[in-house]
Image (tube, rainbow, N blue to C red; front, side, top):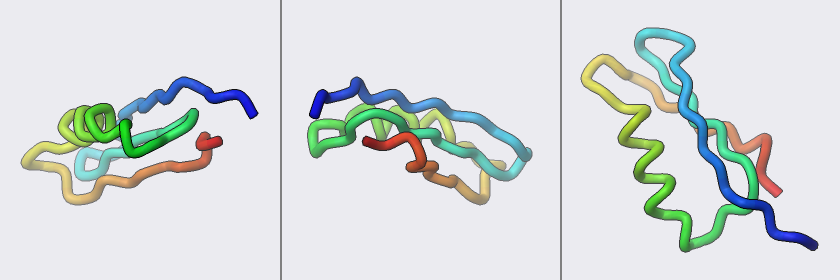
Length: 57
């Protein structure tokens, strides 16, 4: 099995919600990338952050 690079894309379909689309291969070493995506997805107005795992290997 080949290892795919991890990518996280943040989108905001609603003013009070963000979605983090995660694709590739997530490991324990992915914490920094996940926290960076979380910080991009969060703000004072955001009430929900959805993690979309559909693209995981």
